View 1 (tube, rainbow, N blue to C red):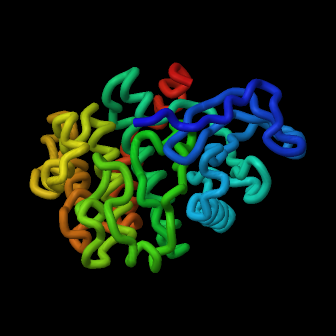
View 2 (cartoon, rainbow, N blue to C red):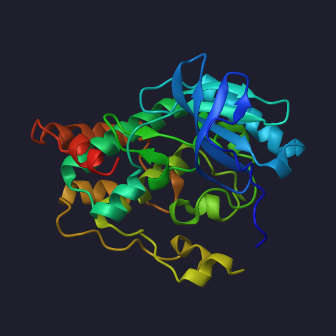
Length: 297
């Protein structure tokens, strides 16, 4: 694979008027992400820039604009906020809230599987956010450990492939992150089944990973490039990896229900939250979430 084009911004370099780069945080195929300082907000922010070789790409610009519209439309305590969108000029980018704390993936990688005192509040918060998103007639489509920042409350980030339920129903081709995609996303949505239940699967796969320390549907490394969907996406044919014995029976049943292959058999986010609430209420009052997350921040 050829090296991706990069902006190579140094600390203090201007991204836009009153907005300067501080540190590169990462990126993907089309984007680079920088920690930045915004003079108007007088705050640290995250700048999500189109890569130099994509600034004239009409599709990339359209998708950046769509993400900006979704960020502008959503306002929820567990969903990252967007503050600005610059869609013209030499550096098209979004300005997104900077969140302190590690991602759930980093927390698992550094500290191992989560205990119930962390897992249950996390599950309840994100289920609530997904219920809200469904009320707004949208779908996230990429719920995974990388896209959850662990804080109090945890925050769901990265709306780059989020879309309206209407548009999701007509989406074709695999979309999302392989290990956390439900069958309908893996199969290219041939029957128009992508919707809110798809986000429930993503949350279920994420929680399974969080409580077990491993993805629920393991595969060989080379499987990512396979032309056989059942090799690339073992969730199409396999049952999820068994949950640890430490997971209580009621929670075990609930988590497995989120991974039903048929979207109609999964609980809604609201139903999931309703069944999680009494489990959270039974936890000790002092939760370890913020203390442990702070160790990896």
